[in-house]
Length: 358
Image 1 (cartoon, rainbow, N blue to C red):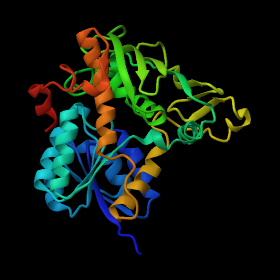
Image 2: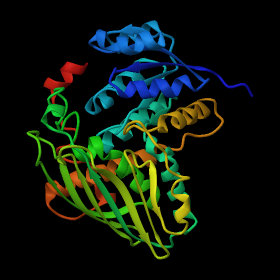
Image 3: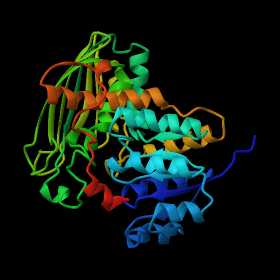
Image 4: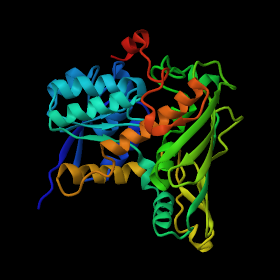
C-alpha cells in the first residue's frame, strides 16, 4: 500500500525546530510547508534554509496552508492553549514537544478533544528511541539483570541566571517548570518506560543557583510497584558546565548504567560488558537523534500501518508522575502517585505571560 505524504507546519521557532526539520528532511512521508512566530524575523533561519512560508500567527498559517500536521514547539505553558484552539478550529493532527502538557487535566482534555475531532496527538519523548535506552529496555524485559532492586537518576547540569533571563516564560511555574519539568522530563519519562510504574514519591525541592520562582534542584526517594526502590537527583545548579545525566539500575543478576548528554550511551552493562560500545551513540547536543525515529512512527500511525507507541495512558502517567514530585514537595510528605491529580503550582495561570505568546 502506497503511503501518503503529510504536509506539516510549525508553531514556534526555537532551536528545537531545527531538530524536527532535520528529521523530516530524512523522512519521505513529510513535506515541511510553513512556520510561524509572533516575531516573524525569528522564522528566517528556518524558512530560508528549508523553503518554508513564514507567518506571524498560527491562525494565518492554518488558514493559508493546507496542513495535515502541526508541531507545537512553543513555551511549555502554552502547549495546552495552542492545542485546544487548533483542535477546535482546524482539521489537523498535533505533534507536541516535551513535556507535552503541565497538568494531567490538560492531557485528558486535549486527548478527549482530539478523539472527538478524529485527530491524533503525538507526544515528543524522543529519548525512548536511543540505542542505549532500547537495549536496557530489552535487557529488563528479558531479565538479563534479574529482578530490579535499585534505580538511580542523576542529572547534574548548568543553567546560570543568564539562561533564565533570555525569556519571560523561563523559570516560571506557569509556563516552564523547573529542572524537573524542563530538563528532567525525559529522564522521568524514560524511568517509567524502563522500569514500570512508581508507587510512592517523596520529593524535596530547592532553588540554589538562580533567582527564579521554580526549583533548580530536586531530590527524591521512590518506591516502585514491583518493589524496587530508587533515588532521583536533578539539578541545574551545577557549575560551571553540564556534568552528568544518567540512569543506573542494580538487579539481582547484575547492573547497568546509561548516560551521556541525552542518555545516549550504555556506560555499564555487567551481563555483557563488551556490548557497551555497540549500544552507544555520539551526539552533537542534548537533543540526540530520537526525532528521526519519532517522525517515522508518526508517519506509520497516520498511514494506519502501526499505532504510535506513546498513547494517552502512557502520556498521562508520565505527567502524573511529574506532578507527584511537585505535590509531594508542596505537601511535605510521601504521596501515592496513582492518587495524585495535579500540583498546585505547576501550570498555574499567568495571563500576563500568556498574552506575550498568543
